[in-house]
Image (tube, rainbow, N blue to C red):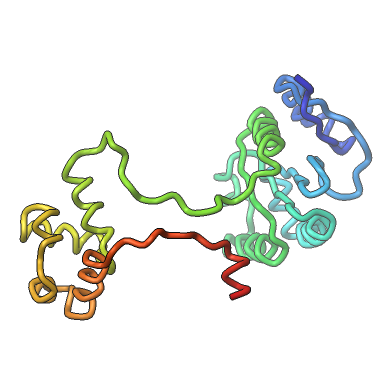
Length: 228
């Protein structure tokens, strides 16, 4: 298997992180990097800071300069904070201003923030970033259909809650009143409308879905929907 590769700033040699990366079969190349401490690919780079250095960089304004540079150079910049976060309270002059500065740079410059406890965890985080560097968002959100192993009552709740405008609480209310999903599905629009929280408009939508003849569903891409 070809080892993963990362470019690290020369000043990171003594941090212990490159040694830990080597243990994870990550090959480290050193260079004098003008921006960031670790470059994973043309899009992803990591600025590593100890908790003490992070606090210090807030008060001497280095964090703003570094955030601006890394975000300008890389599409997916990361700020990796290494150490015990509890130390912040003792190091920061004012917690409100400290977290205000962190909020500013993460939002203004799109920094992703990772927290690790020590060099070993830092290396593990960088290694996983390398593995998932090209991860893409899901094409669609996973449905909330329960696993077959889950209990029958929960499956009944999910079944009824799939009706238009019926959430989990309303599904539980309907099942408590009528006993079974079959009885709920067999209700007339009038009977449904008499249930607290449904009303005529929602009842008609439910019956429309239950009584309409099935027509094969054809999913369209977001792009085609835009072109319509």
